[in-house]
Length: 222
Image (tube, rainbow, N blue to C red; front, side, top):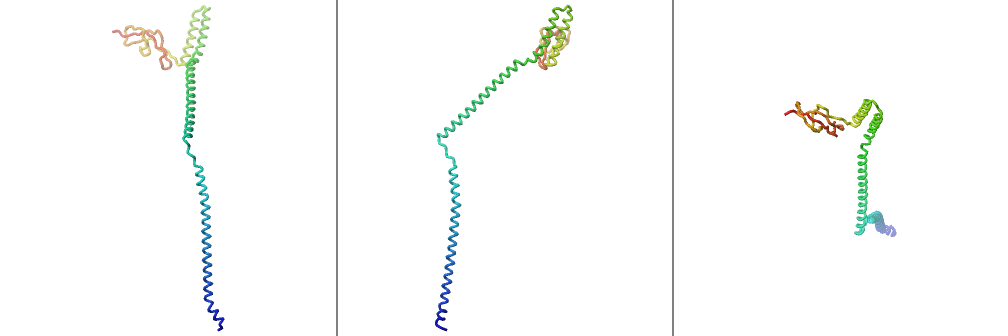
């Protein structure tokens, strides 16, 4: 073996160890570089996410309404008070107009409540006028009486059928102080008070008495 071969054998282990160590150092450096890059990426991502949140927080602070000053609060209350007063005055005016309208309508109803009745009575008045004109030159009294009876019958029938007017009280009826007005009493052979004579008939409008009958009453003897 030559001296050069011995030298190569002697140097080879050291050279291999040095090369292995260099490779390990390169691997370590590469790993450190990768770790550094990952950390930088995470930091950039965190920064980007933090910026929108910061913007949203800023926006919420800007959107928060500012608190009114005492002068602004007073001005706002005065405005609301004026609006309420205006509404109250309008409603009071509307109610006053409604009240006046109701009074007017009520008065008109009262004034013209009998308009239909009076219109129907005009026919009877016309018939009475014609009867009087005929009586001025008539020679037959009976014809005048018959004409008056006819007008009276038509009038009574109209009042009964159209307006519900009815008469009551006849001789021999029982005396009823609620609907009969006694203008005199006569003792007779009767067992209870009865109507001896009717001086003025009574009238009912449907079920309501609008005029009591004026009568003479027969009463039992003592």
